[in-house]
Length: 213
Image (cartoon, rainbow, N blue to C red; front, side, top):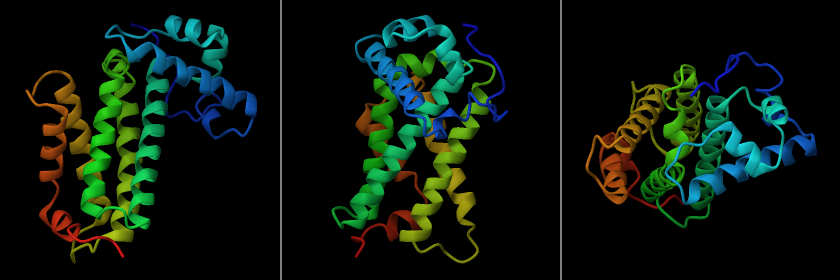
């Protein structure tokens, strides 16, 4: 697959369209994201740009006006999933519906479900040359959300740098999920979530045992 163009970190107009307030751009992105859902819901085949533009009802030039390729689209879609997952967990804790520890389990479950539902799409781009840069961006974004959560809801032990813990937990979770998706571990999705929760640092698991006021 050679759908990979440009530099994901270049900051050009294509890469920055997700911050645009232009309703036409938002609509086009919605069509592209909707196409991903349709193409991956009942299929195990790799998704191509041709598949996406056909399903979304847009031209290839329109697609490339928003994304440099499948790798950039994949990271943008994954980052949006992180935002949604993080927001849902924060809202639950703020309303006292769950403990912070339960929210961590729920967040992992949502992440695994998202990646599993879009397995064909993500696996199709995982080995593209620029996907490593995209993966690093995803870890950074996920780590940032974990930092915000831990600073607000969890007592960090003296001498522990919160941003390092966040990067460690985020990177470990994504690496484990990626290996599981490649078939390296024989686990159900529920078992995977329980393993990831169990692998959290003990001070995080212990501090998350009580509901947040």
